[in-house]
Image (cartoon, rainbow, N blue to C red; front, side, top):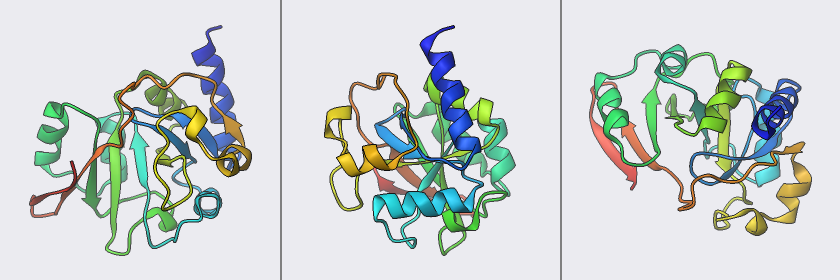
Length: 189
C-alpha cells in the first residue's frame, strides 16, 4: 500500500473519533477536524487559542459536496472557481449540515473546493467537509513549512500526517465573499 493510502486511512480514523490532525493542505500546513463535530471544533479553537467569533474555513472535495453544505451556491462561484489560478476560498451565505460553532455570526461559512489529491481523497473518504486553519497559534504568522510549526500545535494534535506539502509556494488561499445577490468582494488576494 502506498504512503498516501495509509496516511489517508490513519487521518480519517482520527477525524471520525473527533480528533484533530495536522496535515498538508492545498495551500499551507493546516490543522483540521470534522466540520460536523462541534466538540472537535471546540478543541481546535482551544488549541489555536482563537476566539470563537473568528470563524475558520472548511474544505470540500468537489462541487457536488459543496452543494450539500450551502443552501444555494451562486452561479458566479462556479465561474470564479473554474478560472482561479490559485486555491480560492469563497465565503457563502446560509451553510447547511455543519456544526453551529463553525458558522460565522452573519450565517456565512468560508469553503474551499480542493484540487490537492491528498486532501481530496481524505475528504472523500471521510464523506464530510474538514475544518482547515493554519497550523499556528492565533495571531502568529502562518508556518511556511513543518519546521516552523509551534511545538504546542505539534503536541496538541491527535495525528500528524506524514506526507510532504505539495504546494511549494506555501501561501494561504485567496478569500472572496459572495453575497446571496451575487455581489463579489475580495477579502484576501
